[in-house]
Length: 393
Ligand SMILES: [Zn+2]
Image (tube, rainbow, N blue to C red; front, side, top):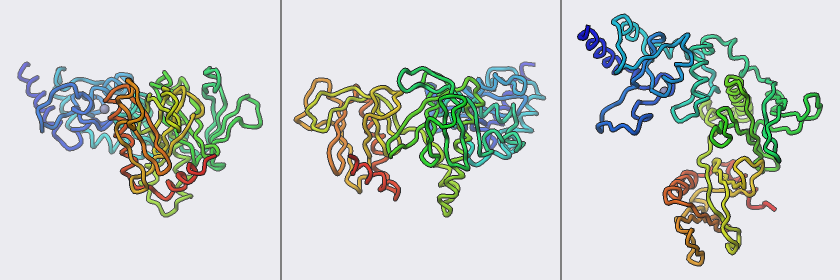
């Protein structure tokens, strides 16, 4: 028996070498990426060390935990630690990640968000459920909740002033090009109309304190507005997210007929480049530094008193180095303060913005975040945003 066990384990390890099996079937992670604490010899390719012996796929530890929620379709075991029978190994050999992908991801809509190991638990869990439990990508009818171009339903929306979550009716209409919500269930006039061309959505489990928390932003008079929503049902929440992506995709296809799909798909929704606390001073640099929550959303650096505020207290446009924007570590010599040792100066064509971080690590992370946009040349649409910021009252 023991030698059978050993032989089966060796065969499984060989299967991990086959194309496709070396990365997690669901989040694409190589095992070393998700378990960085473990010390692997340099240059050795690591494998996902978990497998579903009912689906025939190899996966990372984190996704194996999500497969345990769908035990009726997926049963998982450790490749290295659990006993395997010869017929189970045979089955793993006959399927594998590439064949399973060809089956369970046959018709993933272009706009559908396929999460990676960096994404939140909700997105990864619903992706796994959509694939194997609901089989949404084997049957196009099952995609209607997010691909139909119209969606209506209730979401808990955080109140702007008191932070209380109240049930609100939301309507997404691709035809009208808007997402809107109503304060009263029978109201005829929406409380807010968000034009789909400026809408962004990003899951914010940490900031909102709920795994299902979604931050939706839109522009009103060129300023960013935030709303925070959630729904207990994880599928509903991710369906809303993908419905917004679908509506944006169709809007962009019409607005930019010459653009390639891959160009457009990268613009459907975006995660923030960085968020966190820093301290800032005013334009004259004479007032004291105040702690604020900062969000770097593409080229917009916004600051808030509270991370969940509906409006930014201010927004700064960060252009490219060719256009006179730079970021420097430290503060000008005339700015003093014992707690300001981890300073950052952003130089724009018009003025300097001064920030202070609480640690060197934070300072380096923020500088790296600013560098990613400063090093990237400005696009035609960036010039329009820059011009707006320059003439802002
Ligand atoms: Zn994974």
